[in-house]
Amino acid sequence: MAVKIAPSLLSADFARIADEVARVTAGGADWLHLDVMDGHFVPNLTFGPALVRAVRQVTELPLDVHLMIERPADFIVPFAKAGADYLTIHVEAQGDLTRVLKDIRGLGVHPAISINPPTPVEALEPYLSLVDLVLVMSVNPGFGGQGFIPEVVPKVKALAARPRSYIIEIDGGINAETAGPAAAAGAEVLVAGSAVFGARDAAKAIAAIRAAGDASRPR
Image 1 (tube, helix red, strand yellow):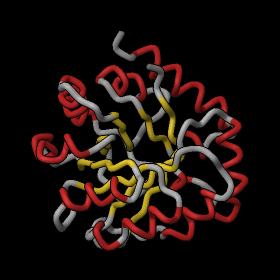
Image 2: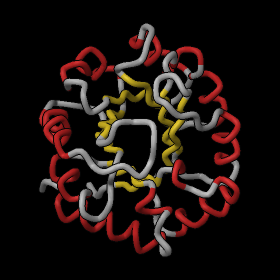
Image 3: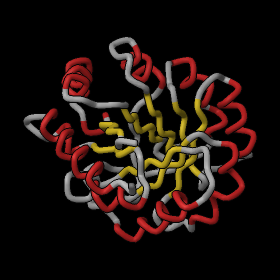
Image 4: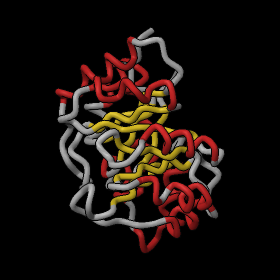
């Protein structure tokens, strides 16, 4: 399976969001990744369901909504109604995560779970049968433009080695240099922010990341 590229709108120009979405869509993006931060779970604040709804109105691409929020149970309904296709919560978040994941599926949205770099991969075990996607963070969440943390690669390998029904996604510091090791370990969806939106030619940047990932994918 070819890798999918999910440009992260965290690195987009929010004043021109429709144009930015059109630019990466024309450039070959497979998904769009939207990072929601609440200022508590991570030390940054981004946007809410209104922006997801606005993006949904200008694209048919799958919307991969990453909830970096402390209490995801309080927010899954508005983000589902806004048009999310995937809703990712963190294993480090508060609340009954099993119930939250089941509720996400009940809303007609793909449930997903994410893990931060310091957290052992074993923490995901109770939830893997409940999700359609696992997101491995390859930076500490909260801000864009950080460097890739190679120590997370064994987590991707461990997740890929299991009998599974989930997709493996990786987010953080992904570019044409790091896409290869990530994909070689088993990552199937590559989230790239500044490497795409910071490029003058988004199509060329997406193509370079895709080529590096596809060349390294296990055969």
